[in-house]
Image 1 (cartoon, rainbow, N blue to C red):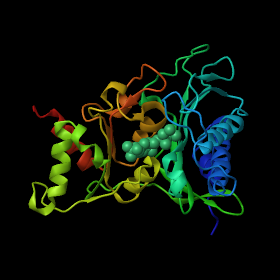
Image 2: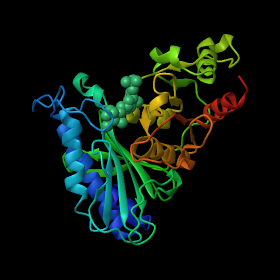
Image 3: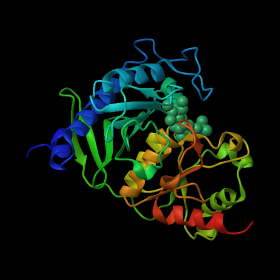
Image 4: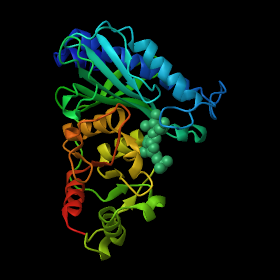
Length: 325
Ligand code: AHG
Ligand code: MN
Ligand code: MN
Ligand code: MN
């Protein structure tokens, strides 16, 4: 049987050749990043780099290496006009934007606090198109995304894409370097009994999140009438991938500690791409009060409250946010 490669899939789906080239550049960058991540301990690339990014986070050597790989690899695409990265404060303009040119938003390494302990990390990315010649607006709502995707550097390196119809998962074949379609038409189960949240922040949570988690923890003895499990890797890509594969809900809500910053996770290159993937797979993405893909950012590194996952849980969380306190 012929293996369906990433290129074959994108070509069969009828994408514009410039978009296919860009997605192949992204795939190359993910492959190079996977290589660097796997050799991190051997090349002395663990620990901290000694610098901070625009979010005030300590950068890891691999945050910077992955960012450099994406910039140098993707900047080759002739129709790529702009780059927005977690690790770069300003928007990078590569050319004078023309209508239809691409803008790439990316988190070069997600979950990088896991690097020193050799746990799964990933890359998140999103592509939008310039609306008119000379238009330098990158502050667009998630619904404007043409493609959303992520790479997971786990036991296997995977790339998951929402480009055109549905969500497809590709696995990197070690040796040939080819991404092969291994999960066609991924769909997220509507119901689940797993949730993911950093529960050490419980004392900072708002009431709807407290109530939701309390009901899950009460299990079969509580209003949900069934037992739940909690899982937390502290790597959004790993978390969202698990949720996509077997159902669940991932929460990083606004709380008393992150409210002033607008939340923990960044809208344009972390949460909006994951929300597009979730919706394309039959799940949902919400802040609790608003649909993620409707949010219009006011700055490139804007943060947002985040709820992603199985329809039944996200709908319940939305309903719990609507109830008066
Ligand atoms: P990044 O490594 O790109 O800065 O993102 C880290 C994020 C996300 O991956 C994860 O879900 C979250 O931070 C973990 O937060 P806690 O440290 O509160 O667990
Ligand atoms: Mn970071
Ligand atoms: Mn991240
Ligand atoms: Mn990151």
